[in-house]
Image (tube, rainbow, N blue to C red):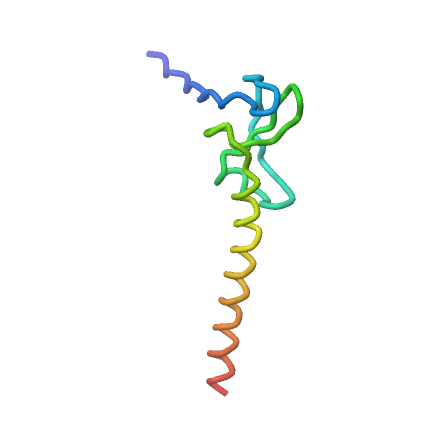
Length: 89
């Protein structure tokens, strides 16, 4: 018995040129390996535009929020650990 081959889900068409051909983005400067996976980032094979492959919309707002929230969360976690460590001395 043959195993069924998983079907790749179709990406939304490129909002810039309308092409249906796009490849999954695995790494970006703003999100490393995690960001593109979270936001379904794809890159159009025709024009090179990067966008959310699930919705077909720009990922700019999500990228800005991700780029601000993650560093702030890390800062506050470090601040809490510093406060706990300082209180123990």
